[in-house]
Image 1 (cartoon, rainbow, N blue to C red):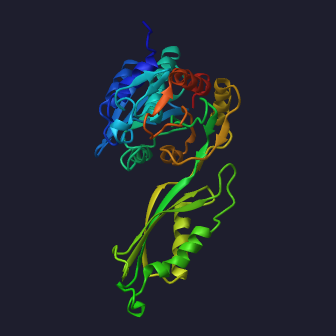
Image 2: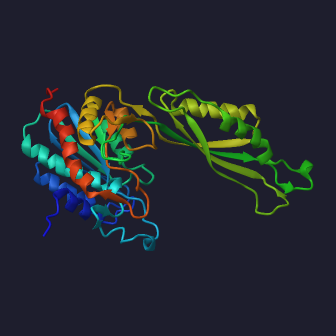
Image 3: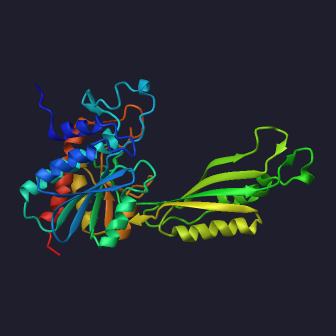
Length: 383
């Protein structure tokens, strides 16, 4: 009989809990009990419908936080899956199930690595911690964003943060995320006057009025990039106007657009630039903003150097160091003064039907995270 590894067993237990955001479905209670047995101080921070777990071992600095989430996106039609998305299944050396890659595999590996670390280094310098939320895949209001506010009020110190998001592209450890772009969404409403298409003199078409402004907005080059960041970009994601009839000039136009921006900008400056553009075009408009998070970037230092060396050892060559992709909860931790990186399994199947992770990669993850923790804390001077 083949023996199941500790990390595979734990990842499977987590996948079996249908923790569709923001429902934690008991994942954090399971992990909190394990970490408490390992000697961690455990604090549960529940805000609204969201569960957050803060577990720490040691005291003082430096403070290293492993950051993850227990919630998953909905599986969609279960009939489209080869096996039940919440029945973890291993086929041909691959673990299938919703959250296998994003990110219950990493969370399980975090916990196993932490157990091994404190067993081997019970009197380690500084503090090692785990922060989990059930609100990463949803609105991200009462999750790490809210916890960061609590930490700010308490004066909680964080020096380094490793997020377990699936960052690898082809093989485990081939990419190191050293920053993320900011994300800013605007909802533009342009008011016109509804009327008959045969009598345009008696109406005012908001589509016609907004078109030149939108053309300028979409064609603008915002910058040329920033260090390892690509140029800031804007995409229109939704546009709506009209009654559905072909003979009615609409009275209102709504446009939703998103900016992914590098550290050349911050949200207030971008908002002002966009509003000024619409003002120049003389639109009768309102503009509502949603700030998902500011960009962050981890410069050269102990965290980045340690990650580069550890990942090179696991992947066989130095990792690509990137700021691409979407965003992550590290955007809420970086403003606390922490340096942040993201290291996790291959991301090819995330949010897809038959989401999966290679068992060999999953079983290598605890060793990878343990090597990072030991490099940063085992011999670190207390401070």
